[in-house]
Length: 344
Image (cartoon, rainbow, N blue to C red; front, side, top):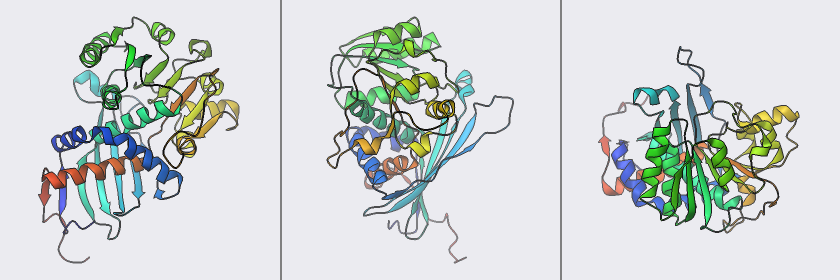
């Protein structure tokens, strides 16, 4: 990409504007990126996890997700994202992120974007795409339940609304009751469905058929397969909520088996419990035809779980989409003397 040797900074405000004006196009963008990944048109190394040693617990982590996306304007980049759950107790966001984009021809970094909004948007688009793929069926009359009501849950809800999904009932549960109530009040302004704040997790599991897990859980807390209805369709976005027995009893879709079965995710724990990967699991891109429609039909007698680990190439795809919008709108900060002028 020709950026005239300049370096650009795209702030949260500019990212927000770009995402708001392009929200309905993100699901097709994510779908196309999954297809490119499955076709070998991208490079997506494993994410690297840094866990700082501190008194704040082992749940703190900072993750590096490098990736390359080919095409007309080949771009490489890396997302550097932190997750510190304790931040919520001191009034800070759980996650902070930046996204750096590099010209794939010269290697020159040409932009740094606020990354947490991009990450949330691509996570939401992936979740809504997953809902279609795992047999959630028509876009109305479902009873949806949100477990965890933070930034990611809100992004997923906004994406469902942008994609014109309708629900007969919305259930909400969070271990912090005030957060659940705030989410419920907010969602109720955007839907004609009844919105209920569930008093217990068991109540929500019993009364919904499309479940969205968007928590900060570091290990499974739902371990009894009997708690999950056979007809449940689950968007397991937080990856570590479900015990191995539930995963082994379900039909599983992941964004990529090699990426997802690591770092003590629920599918990884299932692999460890079984001693192999010989359970019902498939990649999301293997479920997509050339036209982007699902080529896989779930068995209606067993739950289906979509567990997207989060591919860095999705952040690159959404990030370059945001950057181009900000560049056209001149809604960015240009730095002309960021790099040395002499060849090194």
